[in-house]
Picture: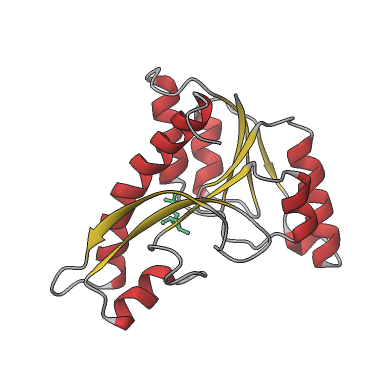
Length: 189
Ligand code: GRF
C-alpha cells in the first residue's frame, strides 16, 4: 500500500507512522510527505529519506487553483491512501471526489462533537469530561466523513488546551497507526 501523508506542523503523527514502518509494524510505503508550508513535519520526512513537497495557497491566485495543484501533486504519487496527519487545510469537494474514500483524517475530538480547527479548545470550553480522537474518512464536509475508529481521553482537573491536546496526541498517534495497519491489511475499507 502506497500512502502520501499531508502535514502542517510538528509532524508527531507522521513520526509515529515512520517509526511503525521502520519497525516493520506497518507494511506500507510512504511515497511522499506533503505540506501547505515549510514545517517540522517535512524535516522529519527528509530525515527518513522520504520525498517531500509543498503546495502553498500563497502561491496560487485562487483557492480553486490551489486545490487543483495539490490534487495533481498528490495524484503524481499514485497513492492508495492519503493520510491527513495534522494537515490544517480544508480541501474542496473535487479533490475529495478525485480520491473518494481514500483520504483519511485524524481529528483531536470525539466527532461528531467539536469539529473544526479548535476541537480541543472547544471541548474544554464546553466542559465535557471525556473527549478523545477520531480517525475518519474525509468527505466533502468539515470532519463529517465516516468514522473508522475512536479513542476516549478523560479531561483532568486543571487541564489547559495544551496539556489536554498532548494527552490526546498520545492516543492519536497509536490510533492512526493501527487504523492505517487495518487499511493495509484489508480489515477495513
Ligand atoms: C493533531 O492533534 C491533529 O489531529 C491536529 O493537530 C495535531 C497535529 O500534530 N489537527 P502533529 O503535527 O502530528 O504533531
